[in-house]
Length: 560
Image 1 (cartoon, helix red, strand yellow):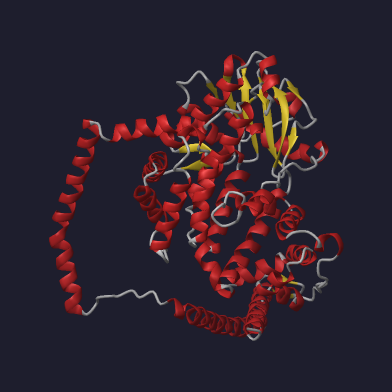
Image 2 (spheres, helix red, strand yellow; image 1 turned 90 degrees about the horizontal axis):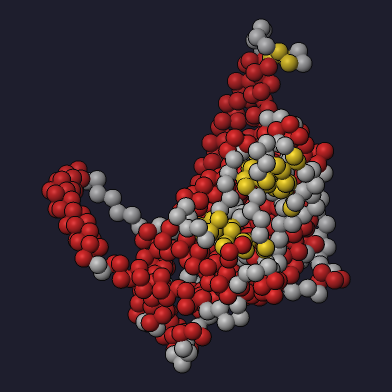
């Protein structure tokens, strides 16, 4: 609690900035709901409650949100990019607006970045490398990229984290965590999306992106997966220069996002490239369970001999074996237009949160009926996946987080393929993968392996049954049987009781600190600061922050 109080005080300037931007773009009500205004007013920082006027007031809500996120900086831009993958939460016009968010920002001047670069690579760039171009190749919100040449003549790119970016992002993440907890407490409808868990996942994702060594490990993982495929090139990482702040990797020279005519001029076949690009990503998803989550035209390079190169592995997705089975089952159900199989997959994803299973079954049947008259080659995977997420959104179901990246990657991939080849059909490439995996499930070896596993698990359950029954009977005799009841109506009461006990504990602790520090003040000797006992001053300082937390907490509870 003391840590949270100090955190809030430390982040007040950033909190004021965030609140001001939200109010200017017409989201003042959300500022009030989250309690931001109360915290700032009690800290003596005045907010100007001017509603959105002029040009801003004429904008649609999605546009205002997107512009506010852009103005708030890299953390919120990244948040918007993550929200662009949540097609189960937002309708298409919101997703389209979030997709306009990009990380391209003005570059940090080289003289400001230079000291951090020297510390990260262990020497002057001109000494460590045979050549180093101080003009950035690209500048994003988290890192900047430079071209360089190793001593052996190898061309590489040097990806360097922007100076000072970590402190800003960590402050924003702390504020987001506070806001998520308040949102769950004050807006009950938000709980089905579990905002606290979403922010926690976002924190992990962003921290991974801040760690440039993590991206390097991703690259090595993909390189191992495609070591036997001469048609796919993954850059080599130079670990002697790589750490959490800098990433040095092989420069892949190729065409990015090129028009079909330009590709033909270079002797490449757009139709073949579209097919190979699709097969590469589908192999990542369905075979490896580890995939590039952002295969947009800038991250897919077209190389001589119609080879595929992939770069920028900061955002990757991972699927467990069971999840891959569900994905294959879903795609197989879509291909065969199997209503019951598709419904079962959606029920598996939603767990126990389905409010009206009959309505969900009807929506699934209606979806497949809309595709009844279409030939397989005319089915667009992107539209089909969007329809499925729309069904989940309409039935108040939340798509598992690992699938949001997958759906987004497949939709992006299909768009890239159609840019290269107007006759490209993603379903033509999905079908062979799915059918092959389904066939592999029913080979004698696979059936035997599953049978052995089932027998082993059954024997383990049977062997453990006497022990479990003995424990159960012993607990019954001792009266230690526990029944867990999930009564959601008591949630708010529990939160209030928890806050009250926290305030009481902090009050007792504060009083103890004041008494103890007063006694220390009367004792001579020991370290001193400003002529007063050092430990006594520290005790009073902690008691002061505790008192601030108690006052803020009581004041806020009195307004609700």
